[in-house]
Structure formats: structure tokens, C-alpha cells
Amino acid sequence: MTKLLVFVVENHSLDQMQQEMPWLNSVAQRYGYATNYQAITHPSLPNYLAMAGGDTYGITDDASPAGHPIDAPSVFGQALDAGRTATVYAEAMSTPCEDVNDGTYAVRHNPWTYYVAERQQCQEHDLPLPALQQDVAASNLPNIGLVVPDTCNDAHDCPLSQADEWMRQYVGLVLAGPDFASGRLVVVVTADEDDRHHDNRILTVVAHPSLEHQVSSTALNHYSLSRAYAETAGIAPLANAADAPSLLGAFGLR
Image 1 (cartoon, rainbow, N blue to C red):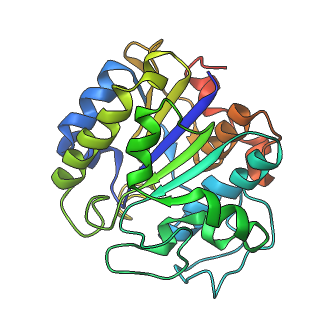
Image 2 (cartoon, rainbow, N blue to C red; image 1 turned 180 degrees about the vertical axis):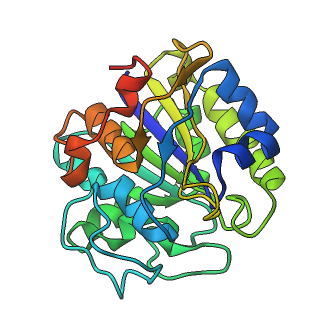
């Protein structure tokens, strides 16, 4: 296993996602999911930063990169520096590494844009969503990747049923692709946070051809996901990810 691709849903709990996303739940039942996975905090941005950098950096709001320039490494930049590949695919983004909100594109959901020392890498590898289809077809998905739906398709502004149909299209595309079939790729679908009413417990689906209805009750969080990125890229986990339980280990993928 040399590749990890993560998709993110917005602001819904484990129970809500299981009940209102039947297609995604079918993937969870076929492969695997975590029952004790919690987001780090509220609101969105610090959770995405926890995934990308293993830290929230004390941020407690959703301000743009202009308000929160982060002078620290991200797992994406670290992977590139180590000779691995890394890509973020962001729906509705007009230009690579766009660092302002633009229609249904929310920059707070695209964490790489906040890491100022990696701006050039971000501009080369933080791409609009159509690049995902091209990379799936070419068996060219990165070692570590993040897929960011727009604010309707991630269920922030639209129902979970809309997000479920979007996941059917795009996660389904990846699961039908050569990287997944070969066993090289693990696909994770998680949420940034819950709706503030379910102890921040969220559904996290883990799909790999070797898994068959595996349910993990290990206590996991977004630092565990950041650690999984690092483990996949063969680099040292960043900040709090170094001490987090391994998401991949919880599913026997390490």
C-alpha cells in the first residue's frame, strides 16, 4: 500500500452519515469503518489543519489564509520534499491553490493554502477537481491526496443525500480505478466535524481491497489521519500526529 486518498464531508455525525448516506454506508459495510473516531474541535478550519499538519496552531475560527498564515510544514509539502507525490483536488476552485473564497469554493476546507512556506508547491499540486478524473484514469493518483467537494456537495449547504450522490460519483470512480484494484490505494471518507450535538463523533470509512466488513472501535481522530498520511509517504508524523494512534494500524493496514 503506497497511496492514501481522503474525501471530506462537512458538519455531520456518525449516526447522521450512516442514516442519510446509504451509498457511503454500503461502502463502510463492505470494507470498514471506525465507530470511535472524533474530530478535534470546532469549527471547520482547525480540523482540516489537524489533518494536514498535525496541529490546530491555536486557531479557533474559519478565517482565510491572509488571517492565518502558518509558518510550519504540512504533510503534503513534507511528502514532496521526500520525493513522494501529493495532490489536493478542490471542487469549484478557479485557479490552483486559490487562497480566497470563491462561490461554492471555501478556502477554509483547503488546508494547504495556509502553509506559506509551501506556496510554490501548493500552486503546482493543489488543483481544481477535474484533475482527479485524469489521475484516476492514468493510474496516477498521488502517494497522499485530499479531495475537497464544494460547499453543496460536502453537505455544508445541501442535504447529506446530495453529498451521498456526489460520493457515489467520485469515490465510486476511484474505487473502480486501477490504483484501488491493484491494492496500492487506501480510500478514506471522513467528516471535518459533527453538528455540535454528538460529541464530535463522526463516521470514518476506510476502503481497501483487503478489508471485509472490518469495524474498528479504537479511539481515533484527525491526528490519526495525519499520521496515516505520514506513514503512507514514509515520513515522520508532524506535531500531535506523532503520538496519535494509527488509523492504518487500527484496520490492519500497517
